[in-house]
Image (cartoon, rainbow, N blue to C red; front, top):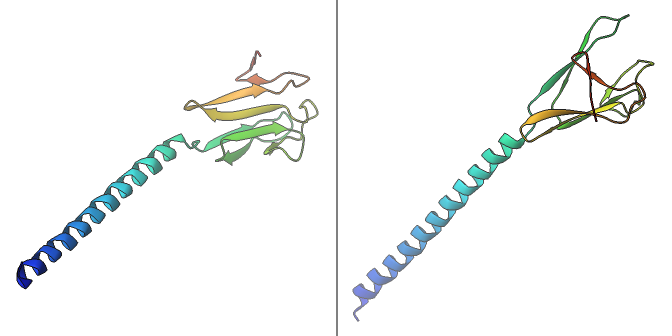
Length: 119
């Protein structure tokens, strides 16, 4: 083969390799974008809790984590200053696309919209 033909073949081979790399990176980028969109839909949406007490004005607290523990224990994400609340009273958790409230075997039970939770 002559020199110019080999040069053209080398150029076409290099161009093909760069085209393949561009295609591979484009597909990787698309997969990463789809995965991040999927993970974004799995995140818990922000939630606001209104804590009402007979002797204090209602207090609104905002949370963004997928699990919130409610109780008198200062380690709880939503600590309460109520004598009727247990140390670890209840847990709010986000899964299957909605929020769930679970009583953590509290002494006085847990009410949601004035109705007692059943376990």
